[in-house]
Length: 511
Image (cartoon, rainbow, N blue to C red; front, top):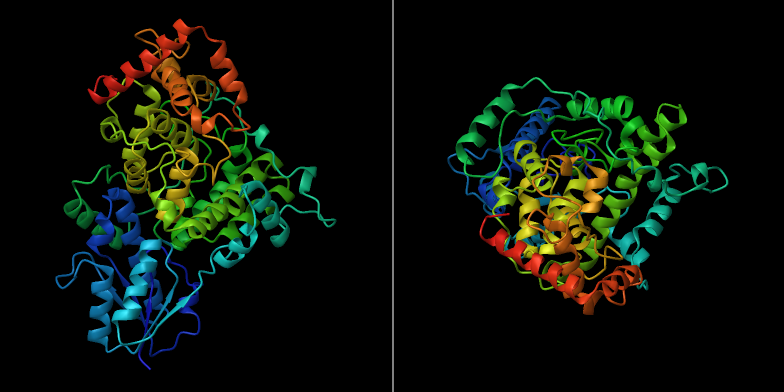
Protein backbone atom coordinates (compact mmCIF):
# COMPACT_ATOMS: atom_id res chain seq x y z
CA UNK A 1 0.00 0.00 0.00
CA UNK A 2 1.31 3.45 -0.98
CA UNK A 3 1.17 5.51 2.22
CA UNK A 4 1.82 9.23 2.68
CA UNK A 5 3.10 10.29 6.09
CA UNK A 6 2.24 13.97 6.36
CA UNK A 7 4.22 16.14 8.80
CA UNK A 8 2.96 19.55 9.93
CA UNK A 9 5.52 22.35 10.24
CA UNK A 10 5.56 22.12 14.06
CA UNK A 11 6.11 18.34 14.17
CA UNK A 12 9.84 18.18 13.37
CA UNK A 13 10.67 15.24 15.60
CA UNK A 14 11.75 11.78 14.51
CA UNK A 15 9.88 10.40 17.55
CA UNK A 16 6.51 11.63 16.25
CA UNK A 17 4.04 8.75 16.00
CA UNK A 18 3.29 9.39 12.33
CA UNK A 19 6.85 8.21 11.56
CA UNK A 20 6.64 5.05 13.66
CA UNK A 21 6.82 1.71 11.81
CA UNK A 22 7.61 3.50 8.55
CA UNK A 23 8.52 1.28 5.58
CA UNK A 24 10.63 1.86 2.47
CA UNK A 25 7.47 2.14 0.38
CA UNK A 26 6.12 5.07 2.45
CA UNK A 27 6.63 8.71 1.52
CA UNK A 28 7.17 11.44 4.11
CA UNK A 29 5.57 14.71 3.02
CA UNK A 30 6.27 18.27 4.18
CA UNK A 31 5.26 21.50 2.46
CA UNK A 32 5.62 25.25 2.81
CA UNK A 33 2.49 27.16 1.78
CA UNK A 34 1.67 30.86 1.60
CA UNK A 35 -1.74 30.35 3.23
CA UNK A 36 -0.08 29.30 6.50
CA UNK A 37 2.52 32.07 6.27
CA UNK A 38 -0.12 34.76 5.83
CA UNK A 39 -3.02 33.41 7.92
CA UNK A 40 -1.74 36.25 10.05
CA UNK A 41 1.32 38.08 8.71
CA UNK A 42 3.91 36.06 10.60
CA UNK A 43 7.23 37.64 11.54
CA UNK A 44 9.87 37.02 8.81
CA UNK A 45 12.23 35.49 11.39
CA UNK A 46 9.51 33.03 12.37
CA UNK A 47 8.89 32.03 8.75
CA UNK A 48 12.61 31.68 8.06
CA UNK A 49 13.03 29.56 11.18
CA UNK A 50 10.14 27.28 10.23
CA UNK A 51 11.11 26.82 6.59
CA UNK A 52 14.80 26.27 7.34
CA UNK A 53 14.01 23.82 10.16
CA UNK A 54 11.57 21.91 7.94
CA UNK A 55 14.12 21.68 5.11
CA UNK A 56 16.89 20.52 7.42
CA UNK A 57 14.54 17.96 8.97
CA UNK A 58 13.63 16.65 5.52
CA UNK A 59 17.29 16.51 4.52
CA UNK A 60 18.16 14.50 7.65
CA UNK A 61 15.37 12.02 6.90
CA UNK A 62 16.68 11.63 3.36
CA UNK A 63 20.19 10.83 4.63
CA UNK A 64 18.62 8.02 6.65
CA UNK A 65 17.24 6.49 3.48
CA UNK A 66 13.61 7.61 3.73
CA UNK A 67 11.67 8.75 0.69
CA UNK A 68 10.76 12.41 1.29
CA UNK A 69 8.48 14.56 -0.85
CA UNK A 70 9.07 18.25 -0.10
CA UNK A 71 7.37 21.33 -1.54
CA UNK A 72 9.04 24.72 -1.15
CA UNK A 73 7.24 28.04 -0.91
CA UNK A 74 8.89 29.04 -4.20
CA UNK A 75 7.97 25.92 -6.20
CA UNK A 76 6.12 26.82 -9.39
CA UNK A 77 3.29 24.30 -8.94
CA UNK A 78 2.70 25.12 -5.25
CA UNK A 79 -1.05 25.60 -4.76
CA UNK A 80 -0.49 27.80 -1.67
CA UNK A 81 -2.61 25.78 0.76
CA UNK A 82 -2.15 22.65 2.87
CA UNK A 83 -5.30 21.02 1.52
CA UNK A 84 -4.28 21.83 -2.05
CA UNK A 85 -0.81 20.36 -1.59
CA UNK A 86 -2.06 17.24 0.16
CA UNK A 87 -4.59 16.62 -2.61
CA UNK A 88 -1.91 17.21 -5.25
CA UNK A 89 0.46 14.80 -3.53
CA UNK A 90 -2.24 12.14 -3.28
CA UNK A 91 -2.97 12.50 -6.97
CA UNK A 92 0.61 12.68 -8.28
CA UNK A 93 2.07 10.01 -5.97
CA UNK A 94 -0.98 7.72 -6.26
CA UNK A 95 -1.34 7.59 -2.47
CA UNK A 96 -3.69 5.00 -0.97
CA UNK A 97 -3.56 6.08 2.68
CA UNK A 98 -2.46 9.13 4.70
CA UNK A 99 -0.96 8.84 8.18
CA UNK A 100 -0.51 11.96 10.28
CA UNK A 101 -0.18 13.13 13.87
CA UNK A 102 -3.05 15.19 15.23
CA UNK A 103 -2.52 18.89 14.41
CA UNK A 104 -1.81 21.37 17.20
CA UNK A 105 -4.44 23.94 16.17
CA UNK A 106 -8.21 23.63 15.94
CA UNK A 107 -8.48 25.12 12.45
CA UNK A 108 -6.07 22.43 11.20
CA UNK A 109 -8.15 19.77 12.93
CA UNK A 110 -11.11 21.04 10.88
CA UNK A 111 -8.95 20.94 7.74
CA UNK A 112 -8.06 17.29 8.37
CA UNK A 113 -11.70 16.42 8.99
CA UNK A 114 -12.68 18.01 5.68
CA UNK A 115 -9.98 16.05 3.90
CA UNK A 116 -11.24 12.86 5.50
CA UNK A 117 -14.61 13.54 3.89
CA UNK A 118 -13.40 14.75 0.51
CA UNK A 119 -10.61 12.28 -0.24
CA UNK A 120 -11.44 8.75 -1.28
CA UNK A 121 -8.63 7.26 0.81
CA UNK A 122 -8.40 6.75 4.59
CA UNK A 123 -6.59 9.25 6.83
CA UNK A 124 -5.25 7.81 10.08
CA UNK A 125 -4.82 10.44 12.80
CA UNK A 126 -2.47 9.55 15.65
CA UNK A 127 -2.08 11.30 19.01
CA UNK A 128 0.76 13.74 19.58
CA UNK A 129 3.16 11.91 21.89
CA UNK A 130 5.41 14.94 22.49
CA UNK A 131 3.34 16.21 25.42
CA UNK A 132 3.26 15.01 29.01
CA UNK A 133 -0.53 15.08 29.15
CA UNK A 134 -2.87 13.85 26.43
CA UNK A 135 -6.09 15.67 25.58
CA UNK A 136 -8.16 12.87 27.08
CA UNK A 137 -6.09 12.82 30.27
CA UNK A 138 -6.53 16.57 30.74
CA UNK A 139 -10.25 16.27 30.09
CA UNK A 140 -10.45 13.60 32.77
CA UNK A 141 -8.53 15.84 35.21
CA UNK A 142 -10.84 18.79 34.46
CA UNK A 143 -14.09 16.80 34.75
CA UNK A 144 -16.34 18.07 37.52
CA UNK A 145 -14.04 20.95 38.49
CA UNK A 146 -15.51 24.43 38.82
CA UNK A 147 -12.07 26.03 38.54
CA UNK A 148 -9.11 24.74 36.54
CA UNK A 149 -6.12 25.88 38.57
CA UNK A 150 -2.74 25.20 37.06
CA UNK A 151 -1.00 24.68 40.39
CA UNK A 152 -2.94 21.51 41.19
CA UNK A 153 -2.56 20.14 37.67
CA UNK A 154 1.18 20.83 37.89
CA UNK A 155 1.49 18.86 41.13
CA UNK A 156 -0.15 15.84 39.52
CA UNK A 157 2.25 16.03 36.57
CA UNK A 158 5.23 16.24 38.94
CA UNK A 159 4.05 13.12 40.73
CA UNK A 160 3.26 11.22 37.56
CA UNK A 161 6.68 11.83 36.02
CA UNK A 162 8.59 11.82 39.33
CA UNK A 163 10.29 15.13 38.63
CA UNK A 164 11.60 16.95 41.73
CA UNK A 165 9.77 14.39 43.88
CA UNK A 166 11.27 12.62 46.89
CA UNK A 167 10.92 8.84 47.50
CA UNK A 168 8.14 9.49 50.02
CA UNK A 169 6.12 11.41 47.42
CA UNK A 170 6.77 14.88 48.81
CA UNK A 171 8.12 17.75 46.67
CA UNK A 172 11.86 18.29 46.71
CA UNK A 173 12.71 20.99 49.22
CA UNK A 174 9.37 20.66 50.98
CA UNK A 175 7.45 23.12 48.75
CA UNK A 176 5.77 22.75 45.39
CA UNK A 177 6.38 26.29 44.26
CA UNK A 178 9.29 28.71 44.78
CA UNK A 179 7.85 31.58 42.78
CA UNK A 180 8.20 34.08 45.63
CA UNK A 181 11.97 33.69 45.38
CA UNK A 182 11.95 34.48 41.65
CA UNK A 183 11.00 38.17 41.72
CA UNK A 184 14.21 40.10 42.12
CA UNK A 185 14.35 43.56 40.58
CA UNK A 186 17.08 44.24 38.02
CA UNK A 187 20.39 45.60 39.25
CA UNK A 188 22.58 48.11 37.44
CA UNK A 189 25.08 45.34 36.74
CA UNK A 190 22.50 42.93 35.28
CA UNK A 191 23.21 42.26 31.60
CA UNK A 192 22.42 39.55 29.10
CA UNK A 193 25.16 36.92 28.83
CA UNK A 194 26.45 36.19 25.34
CA UNK A 195 24.22 33.82 23.40
CA UNK A 196 24.92 31.13 20.83
CA UNK A 197 24.90 31.94 17.14
CA UNK A 198 25.09 29.21 14.52
CA UNK A 199 26.86 29.06 11.19
CA UNK A 200 24.43 29.63 8.35
CA UNK A 201 23.97 26.60 6.12
CA UNK A 202 23.27 26.79 2.40
CA UNK A 203 19.70 25.78 3.21
CA UNK A 204 19.27 28.67 5.64
CA UNK A 205 20.82 31.18 3.24
CA UNK A 206 18.38 30.12 0.52
CA UNK A 207 15.46 30.43 2.93
CA UNK A 208 16.52 33.88 4.13
CA UNK A 209 16.67 35.07 0.54
CA UNK A 210 13.23 33.76 -0.40
CA UNK A 211 11.55 34.95 2.81
CA UNK A 212 13.14 38.38 2.41
CA UNK A 213 11.77 38.64 -1.13
CA UNK A 214 8.34 37.11 -0.57
CA UNK A 215 7.35 38.48 2.86
CA UNK A 216 9.04 41.88 3.02
CA UNK A 217 5.73 43.57 3.96
CA UNK A 218 5.43 41.56 7.20
CA UNK A 219 6.20 43.17 10.56
CA UNK A 220 9.69 42.48 11.85
CA UNK A 221 13.35 42.44 10.85
CA UNK A 222 14.58 39.27 9.17
CA UNK A 223 18.24 39.79 9.99
CA UNK A 224 20.40 39.37 11.92
CA UNK A 225 19.24 35.76 12.23
CA UNK A 226 20.65 33.65 15.07
CA UNK A 227 18.10 30.86 15.52
CA UNK A 228 19.03 27.19 15.64
CA UNK A 229 17.42 25.37 12.71
CA UNK A 230 18.38 21.75 13.43
CA UNK A 231 17.95 19.45 16.40
CA UNK A 232 21.73 19.36 16.83
CA UNK A 233 21.88 23.14 17.09
CA UNK A 234 18.85 23.25 19.40
CA UNK A 235 20.54 20.74 21.73
CA UNK A 236 23.60 23.01 21.84
CA UNK A 237 21.34 25.85 22.99
CA UNK A 238 19.64 23.63 25.55
CA UNK A 239 22.90 22.48 27.14
CA UNK A 240 24.25 26.03 27.08
CA UNK A 241 21.19 27.29 28.96
CA UNK A 242 21.34 24.53 31.56
CA UNK A 243 25.07 25.05 32.11
CA UNK A 244 25.43 28.84 32.07
CA UNK A 245 22.04 30.47 32.53
CA UNK A 246 19.72 28.26 34.58
CA UNK A 247 21.55 29.06 37.87
CA UNK A 248 20.42 32.70 37.52
CA UNK A 249 17.12 32.16 35.70
CA UNK A 250 14.99 31.98 38.84
CA UNK A 251 16.15 35.17 40.53
CA UNK A 252 15.60 37.39 37.50
CA UNK A 253 12.88 35.64 35.51
CA UNK A 254 10.47 38.55 36.12
CA UNK A 255 13.05 41.32 35.69
CA UNK A 256 13.12 43.74 32.75
CA UNK A 257 15.85 46.16 31.75
CA UNK A 258 16.16 48.72 28.97
CA UNK A 259 18.27 47.47 26.10
CA UNK A 260 18.38 43.90 27.45
CA UNK A 261 16.24 41.52 25.41
CA UNK A 262 17.03 38.08 26.81
CA UNK A 263 18.63 38.38 30.27
CA UNK A 264 18.66 34.79 31.64
CA UNK A 265 15.66 33.41 29.76
CA UNK A 266 16.09 30.12 27.92
CA UNK A 267 14.89 30.99 24.37
CA UNK A 268 13.98 27.29 24.05
CA UNK A 269 10.21 27.57 23.57
CA UNK A 270 10.57 28.11 19.81
CA UNK A 271 12.49 24.84 19.45
CA UNK A 272 10.22 23.02 21.87
CA UNK A 273 7.04 24.07 20.08
CA UNK A 274 8.17 22.64 16.72
CA UNK A 275 9.65 19.40 18.05
CA UNK A 276 13.38 20.09 17.75
CA UNK A 277 13.50 19.66 21.53
CA UNK A 278 11.24 17.49 23.69
CA UNK A 279 9.78 18.56 27.05
CA UNK A 280 10.87 15.50 29.03
CA UNK A 281 14.51 15.78 28.00
CA UNK A 282 14.53 19.47 28.97
CA UNK A 283 12.99 18.85 32.40
CA UNK A 284 15.31 15.93 33.12
CA UNK A 285 18.40 17.96 32.26
CA UNK A 286 17.26 20.78 34.53
CA UNK A 287 16.53 18.34 37.37
CA UNK A 288 19.95 16.74 36.88
CA UNK A 289 21.61 20.16 37.15
CA UNK A 290 19.91 20.71 40.51
CA UNK A 291 20.86 17.26 41.80
CA UNK A 292 24.50 17.94 40.88
CA UNK A 293 24.38 21.29 42.74
CA UNK A 294 24.82 23.21 39.49
CA UNK A 295 21.54 25.11 39.75
CA UNK A 296 19.48 26.26 42.77
CA UNK A 297 16.07 24.78 43.50
CA UNK A 298 14.13 28.00 42.97
CA UNK A 299 15.52 28.36 39.43
CA UNK A 300 15.11 24.67 38.58
CA UNK A 301 11.57 24.39 39.88
CA UNK A 302 10.52 27.67 38.26
CA UNK A 303 11.88 26.60 34.90
CA UNK A 304 10.37 23.11 35.05
CA UNK A 305 7.01 24.58 36.10
CA UNK A 306 6.88 26.58 32.85
CA UNK A 307 7.21 23.37 30.80
CA UNK A 308 5.71 20.55 32.85
CA UNK A 309 3.02 22.75 34.39
CA UNK A 310 2.06 25.86 32.48
CA UNK A 311 2.69 24.70 28.89
CA UNK A 312 0.76 21.46 29.38
CA UNK A 313 -2.04 23.22 31.25
CA UNK A 314 -2.46 25.84 28.51
CA UNK A 315 -2.66 23.16 25.83
CA UNK A 316 -5.21 21.28 27.90
CA UNK A 317 -7.41 24.36 28.30
CA UNK A 318 -7.21 25.11 24.57
CA UNK A 319 -8.48 21.70 23.49
CA UNK A 320 -10.96 21.43 26.34
CA UNK A 321 -12.70 24.69 25.44
CA UNK A 322 -12.32 25.06 21.66
CA UNK A 323 -13.96 26.16 19.41
CA UNK A 324 -16.18 28.26 21.69
CA UNK A 325 -13.13 29.58 23.52
CA UNK A 326 -12.02 31.60 20.48
CA UNK A 327 -15.20 33.70 20.61
CA UNK A 328 -14.98 34.76 24.25
CA UNK A 329 -14.67 38.46 25.11
CA UNK A 330 -15.60 38.82 28.78
CA UNK A 331 -15.14 42.60 28.97
CA UNK A 332 -16.46 43.21 25.43
CA UNK A 333 -13.16 44.89 24.59
CA UNK A 334 -13.24 46.35 21.07
CA UNK A 335 -10.84 49.32 20.94
CA UNK A 336 -8.66 49.02 17.80
CA UNK A 337 -5.03 48.04 18.28
CA UNK A 338 -2.99 51.28 18.45
CA UNK A 339 -0.19 52.08 16.00
CA UNK A 340 2.62 51.69 18.53
CA UNK A 341 2.11 47.93 18.69
CA UNK A 342 3.55 47.98 15.17
CA UNK A 343 5.96 50.90 15.01
CA UNK A 344 7.08 51.22 18.69
CA UNK A 345 6.58 54.98 18.40
CA UNK A 346 5.33 55.94 21.84
CA UNK A 347 6.61 57.97 24.77
CA UNK A 348 5.94 54.96 27.02
CA UNK A 349 9.42 53.40 27.28
CA UNK A 350 8.14 50.03 28.47
CA UNK A 351 5.88 49.61 25.43
CA UNK A 352 8.55 50.87 23.05
CA UNK A 353 11.05 48.36 24.47
CA UNK A 354 8.71 45.37 24.30
CA UNK A 355 7.54 46.14 20.77
CA UNK A 356 11.06 46.84 19.49
CA UNK A 357 12.23 43.53 20.98
CA UNK A 358 9.38 41.80 19.16
CA UNK A 359 10.21 43.57 15.89
CA UNK A 360 13.95 42.90 16.01
CA UNK A 361 14.04 39.43 17.58
CA UNK A 362 10.57 37.87 17.14
CA UNK A 363 10.89 37.55 20.90
CA UNK A 364 9.95 39.30 24.12
CA UNK A 365 10.07 37.42 27.40
CA UNK A 366 6.96 36.33 29.27
CA UNK A 367 6.76 39.22 31.75
CA UNK A 368 6.98 41.79 28.98
CA UNK A 369 4.23 39.94 27.10
CA UNK A 370 2.03 39.71 30.18
CA UNK A 371 2.71 42.86 32.19
CA UNK A 372 3.64 45.36 29.46
CA UNK A 373 1.93 44.76 26.11
CA UNK A 374 -0.72 42.45 27.60
CA UNK A 375 -1.42 44.61 30.63
CA UNK A 376 -1.80 47.75 28.52
CA UNK A 377 -4.12 45.93 26.12
CA UNK A 378 -6.22 44.78 29.08
CA UNK A 379 -6.62 48.09 30.88
CA UNK A 380 -7.15 49.99 27.59
CA UNK A 381 -9.86 47.62 26.42
CA UNK A 382 -8.12 46.68 23.17
CA UNK A 383 -9.96 44.36 20.79
CA UNK A 384 -9.22 40.82 21.95
CA UNK A 385 -9.05 39.33 18.46
CA UNK A 386 -6.69 42.01 17.19
CA UNK A 387 -4.46 41.53 20.22
CA UNK A 388 -4.41 37.76 19.72
CA UNK A 389 -3.55 38.15 16.05
CA UNK A 390 -0.68 40.46 17.01
CA UNK A 391 0.80 37.98 19.49
CA UNK A 392 0.37 35.13 17.00
CA UNK A 393 2.12 37.12 14.27
CA UNK A 394 5.10 38.63 16.04
CA UNK A 395 6.60 35.79 18.11
CA UNK A 396 8.60 32.85 16.78
CA UNK A 397 7.20 30.49 19.43
CA UNK A 398 3.54 31.42 18.85
CA UNK A 399 1.10 28.78 17.68
CA UNK A 400 -2.60 29.21 18.38
CA UNK A 401 -2.82 26.41 20.97
CA UNK A 402 -0.30 28.16 23.21
CA UNK A 403 -0.89 31.78 22.15
CA UNK A 404 -4.66 31.98 22.51
CA UNK A 405 -5.08 30.84 26.14
CA UNK A 406 -2.03 32.85 27.19
CA UNK A 407 -3.31 36.01 25.49
CA UNK A 408 -7.09 35.76 25.72
CA UNK A 409 -7.10 33.96 29.07
CA UNK A 410 -4.14 35.15 31.08
CA UNK A 411 -3.21 38.56 29.64
CA UNK A 412 -6.70 39.83 28.76
CA UNK A 413 -8.96 37.85 31.14
CA UNK A 414 -11.15 37.58 28.08
CA UNK A 415 -12.30 34.10 29.09
CA UNK A 416 -13.78 35.42 32.35
CA UNK A 417 -11.51 33.42 34.64
CA UNK A 418 -11.03 30.01 33.02
CA UNK A 419 -7.24 30.40 32.99
CA UNK A 420 -6.62 33.05 35.67
CA UNK A 421 -8.32 33.67 39.00
CA UNK A 422 -8.10 37.46 38.50
CA UNK A 423 -7.11 39.94 35.77
CA UNK A 424 -3.39 40.67 35.53
CA UNK A 425 -4.10 44.40 35.57
CA UNK A 426 -1.42 46.62 37.09
CA UNK A 427 -0.42 50.26 37.36
CA UNK A 428 3.09 51.55 36.78
CA UNK A 429 4.10 50.43 40.30
CA UNK A 430 4.75 46.90 39.10
CA UNK A 431 6.67 48.04 36.03
CA UNK A 432 8.75 50.45 38.10
CA UNK A 433 9.59 47.72 40.61
CA UNK A 434 10.53 45.02 38.10
CA UNK A 435 12.35 47.16 35.53
CA UNK A 436 14.35 50.33 34.97
CA UNK A 437 12.07 51.42 32.13
CA UNK A 438 10.51 54.22 34.16
CA UNK A 439 13.96 55.78 34.73
CA UNK A 440 14.16 56.43 30.97
CA UNK A 441 10.54 57.43 30.35
CA UNK A 442 8.83 60.70 29.46
CA UNK A 443 6.08 59.82 31.91
CA UNK A 444 6.29 59.85 35.71
CA UNK A 445 5.29 56.53 37.33
CA UNK A 446 4.42 58.25 40.62
CA UNK A 447 1.89 60.68 39.15
CA UNK A 448 -1.74 59.89 38.42
CA UNK A 449 -3.53 62.78 36.71
CA UNK A 450 -0.93 65.31 35.52
CA UNK A 451 0.17 65.72 31.90
CA UNK A 452 3.25 63.60 32.50
CA UNK A 453 1.50 61.01 34.67
CA UNK A 454 2.11 57.45 33.47
CA UNK A 455 -0.96 56.38 31.43
CA UNK A 456 -0.92 52.97 33.14
CA UNK A 457 -1.98 54.55 36.44
CA UNK A 458 -5.29 56.16 35.50
CA UNK A 459 -6.07 53.44 32.97
CA UNK A 460 -5.64 50.80 35.67
CA UNK A 461 -8.23 52.40 37.91
CA UNK A 462 -10.52 53.16 34.99
CA UNK A 463 -10.42 49.50 33.96
CA UNK A 464 -11.25 48.33 37.47
CA UNK A 465 -14.17 50.74 37.80
CA UNK A 466 -15.73 50.38 34.37
CA UNK A 467 -15.72 46.59 34.89
CA UNK A 468 -16.74 46.64 38.54
CA UNK A 469 -20.01 44.85 37.88
CA UNK A 470 -18.03 41.86 36.57
CA UNK A 471 -15.18 41.95 39.10
CA UNK A 472 -16.70 43.20 42.34
CA UNK A 473 -17.28 39.69 43.67
CA UNK A 474 -13.84 38.40 42.76
CA UNK A 475 -12.32 37.12 45.99
CA UNK A 476 -8.88 38.52 45.13
CA UNK A 477 -10.01 42.11 44.51
CA UNK A 478 -11.81 43.46 47.62
CA UNK A 479 -8.79 45.53 48.66
CA UNK A 480 -8.70 47.21 45.24
CA UNK A 481 -12.29 48.37 45.42
CA UNK A 482 -12.11 49.37 49.07
CA UNK A 483 -9.11 51.56 48.16
CA UNK A 484 -11.02 53.21 45.33
CA UNK A 485 -13.99 53.87 47.56
CA UNK A 486 -11.72 55.76 49.96
CA UNK A 487 -10.77 58.25 47.24
CA UNK A 488 -12.83 61.43 47.39
CA UNK A 489 -15.20 62.19 44.54
CA UNK A 490 -12.91 64.84 43.04
CA UNK A 491 -9.98 62.46 42.87
CA UNK A 492 -12.09 59.72 41.33
CA UNK A 493 -13.35 62.11 38.68
CA UNK A 494 -9.84 63.36 37.89
CA UNK A 495 -8.60 59.77 37.44
CA UNK A 496 -11.44 58.85 35.10
CA UNK A 497 -10.90 62.04 33.08
CA UNK A 498 -7.17 61.33 32.79
CA UNK A 499 -7.93 57.84 31.54
CA UNK A 500 -10.31 59.22 28.92
CA UNK A 501 -7.66 61.72 27.77
CA UNK A 502 -5.07 58.93 27.55
CA UNK A 503 -7.35 56.82 25.36
CA UNK A 504 -8.01 59.83 23.13
CA UNK A 505 -4.28 60.52 22.86
CA UNK A 506 -3.74 56.88 21.98
CA UNK A 507 -6.31 57.15 19.19
CA UNK A 508 -4.65 60.33 17.89
CA UNK A 509 -1.10 58.88 18.00
CA UNK A 510 -0.12 61.30 20.76
CA UNK A 511 0.68 59.01 23.70
